[in-house]
Amino acid sequence: MAKSALYHRIQGDISASIASGEYAPGERIPSESALADRYGVTRMTVRQAISGLITKGLVTRKQGSGTYVLRTRQPARALNQLTGFTEDMTEQGYRPTSRQLSNTEEEAPEHVQEWLELNNGAHVIRLERVRFLDETPTALHLVWLPLWLAPDLVRRSMDNVSLYQTLEDEFGIRLSTASQRISAVRASAHEAEVLKVEVGSPLLYTEKITRDENNQPVEFVQSWATPELPIWVELQR
Amino acid sequence: MAKSALYHRIQGDISASIASGEYAPGERIPSESALADRYGVTRMTVRQAISGLITKGLVTRKQGSGTYVLRTRQPARALNQLTGFTEDMTEQGYRPTSRQLSNTEEEAPEHVQEWLELNNGAHVIRLERVRFLDETPTALHLVWLPLWLAPDLVRRSMDNVSLYQTLEDEFGIRLSTASQRISAVRASAHEAEVLKVEVGSPLLYTEKITRDENNQPVEFVQSWATPELPIWVELQR
DNA sequence: GAGTGGTCTAGACCACACG
DNA sequence: GTGTGGTCTAGACCACTCT
Image (tube, rainbow over all chains, first blue to last red; front, side, top):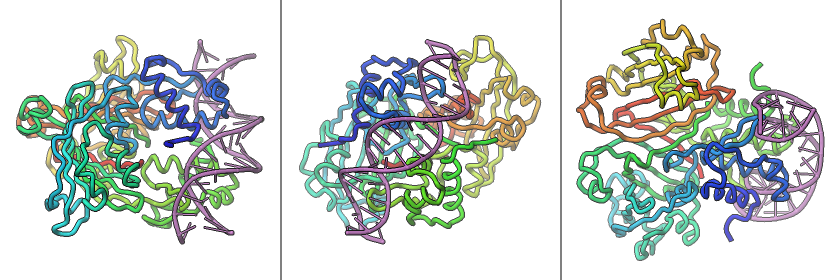
């Protein structure tokens, strides 16, 4: 069984209603009291569900007025929580797919050793995938994992599979925190070919180090995304 | 009067204890029950306070174990809270300067009207500045503000001045939240000239809408930054 | 087993907007 | 005035870690 908490179910229902267009952008969703009645829970529980949707950038609250669906103009990577590409896009009502370009075991290059805090000569899994949104290539992901963490991952096909789900469900790895560095680069020949853009066109480049609950490095990811997949962040002062 | 909610006070106290080093990075803070007792509130209220600290990237919860202070990122932490360029860079030990290119009053273009939720024909202040780090141009900022918010801002020179500080100190505007969208673009002739880069070279492009405590739009900012000024983010699952 | 955070109940009063 | 979200109480039981 996955998440069994009531608020998760409510969150999922509202999320689905937004994705399906039942709750349209700019529109008000049912009041907290109404939702509480509908699900037979208290308002606190409904609020917990809605708080999650706010973090995900799906809705906003206006005191005395209601809770409104935000206008999502285009798909975006949400940066307020650590989520994978698959979860992220599914939440926003897109259909994410991926194609594995390569999945190999090799000795860790120096910069990867450093990020993953590995010793000289340590082996890693190198997984390269193209990410598609509704058939359009939108990002190239190059993931590096310590080999001992998920030894037989290299023998699997990671086409259309959520890496985070796999790590959690099959290897018992629970991700906890990540640090991410975002910059802009020119598309190389390889990136341009894979993403169907011109060589030299601007790409969003991010480097991310993800850690588990014991603060041990789990993955180092390099990502090249087309400008059509911007990053979205909600900030608080 | 400022925020009077109990959880805000508790949040501030914990935040201060972390800043002062009383709760050191990696250490556990007092349990929710202990804090509830100390402040004479229920655990729910303490949880609300801590939830805010998690959003800000200050602490993390571990079920069955406790709530821990996160390791503070040494080099930079730009995107977990709403801060201005000046504060941000000063904190990191740089010497930020800025030069005003223009500061005018004009009718809001359509896309600005939309972001700032203004009526047709409303006037805005348009402030364009180059940001320098240790003499090197690193970002071009184009800020749009509703004219009525800060009517005489247009008659000031904003060279080497923190806009956020000015808004807060002299116009009594207290910023609260922001939504930011990050993408990559090619440098236009104007941007290239100002930032001393080649036309067509990749830039980090961000659009930000900042709101005050009443959720009213205060500023819409477009920013073009060189890849030498990357963005750092800390995430939690 | 003791202590921690995760979830939830069944209410309450308040601040705010005007659906 | 009515309905909305914002805050809070005083409990409860559960899942998890081992401080």
